[in-house]
Image (spheres, rainbow, N blue to C red):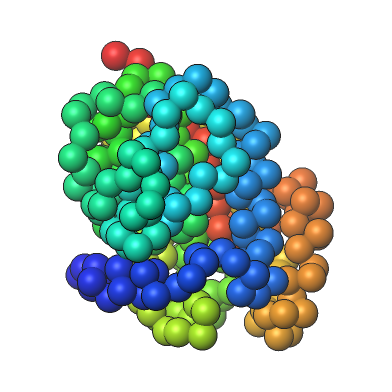
Length: 237
């Protein structure tokens, strides 16, 4: 089953700012992702693909950045911007030194197709910083999608309902391995607040995000993050 890319495009073109202080949950997501990228610091002096960027550079300093997105309004005024799906991009093989794909972009794509394409355009030994929403998140506990390898859910974002994929960590890790990536680091977030959202209003639950860092000490618990950030490296030739 495929998502309606035209609906996704229309939705994101209509949103003034993809992150933009819509709610504490997504504000926290942006903060964690931006902090992780800064901490990893792998993009210096390189040609970077910002896959599904929505025009956000996340403060990255690099030699050259290409922005790719299906939402043309988000990247129309950006230099080196390409309107395309990350499932099918008009770049030569092994073109990029490093790739950034965050903001749950993968959850709007077929994961195998998208990750295969990211691998195709990335040089050997190149870095991939990837973030996605996991079906193992406590938010989905007792729902039919919980722990499924791949399933489509209907969710609400910026007061609008839309469809997206959820993927299990095992499923994504298996695809990454088949696409010639090895995982160097996994950072889950929205762990405790994902659980609390079962009982509390999202606005209240998200204020408990500070507990996330404590839960990283417990492997059995931390794998239930609603969101996962992965630092991957493409294998050498």
